[in-house]
Length: 75
Image (cartoon, rainbow, N blue to C red):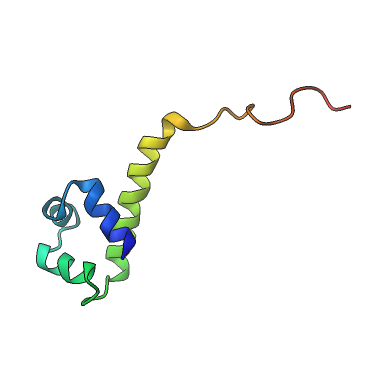
């Protein structure tokens, strides 16, 4: 599962993600290799982590609302 792999990267490792999600490392390993399904509530937590990490990094790169738009009054 890509979202789970990315969450491992963002959190700095399987152990830290396991602490963050309050799930055993062994269970996360089984989910990563596809031997165990990711429960919906856990998937929601993972997506929340990814969104939070993305929002904090990309907030600096948000374009100005005036960029790329019309450059003058309507004709």
